[in-house]
Image (cartoon, rainbow, N blue to C red; front, side, top):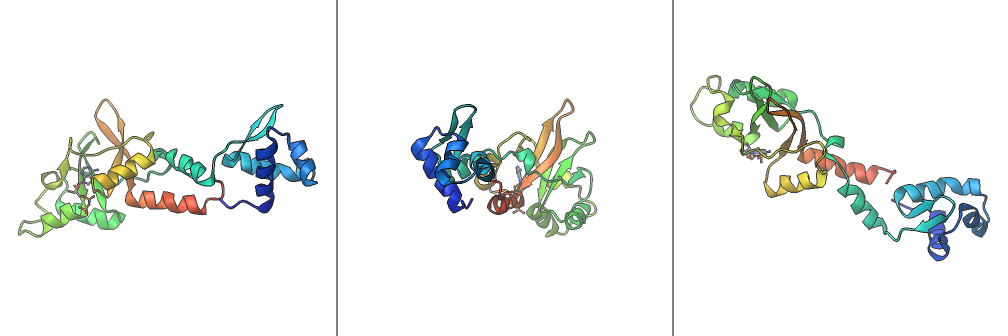
Length: 209
Ligand code: ADP
């Protein structure tokens, strides 16, 4: 986040004089308390300053990059996950390929009759199944999918940074977001490399750091 020169000045004043009231900061800058209010709100929200009622503002000692790291570490899966595309385990490889094109995704999640996760299909899984001579309409996806329990899953409260690390270490493109139910694992979302890219771009273009 870019600070204005006035915001930089406020930080300097609070660094040297904190805890200091808004009134006193305004005095030092020859401005009114009202003029200063938005800047103080921004600096407090961004974590540069802390405000204690009846005490005043003080400097948190955190640098811009520390605050950014803190922010990223708090990103949760539930705030970034996208809609999962699922297919039943009995559908054919041909139909799964069609679904992948129609839905414009690179990973499909496979579910059973109870709509619970049983497998996962990547682009390469479907390509591999397509290079033989078999009839793609006759091969059900459960024959070729990566199946449970070898599937990496995540939950909505997980930290996005941990899931990003899993995508890298396991060399996979996507991870299903699941909810534990009595029936099994219900698929409620997906986190993919695109999700992480979007979070990255949002971080840079977001002014509310
Ligand atoms: P692609 O194979 O198209 O490059 P991936 O790298 O995502 O896509 O998949 C590599 C292999 O890992 C595939 O066989 C796929 O079934 C499997 N796979 C994909 N996602 C997961 C996951 N979340 N957990 C376990 N295996 C996965």
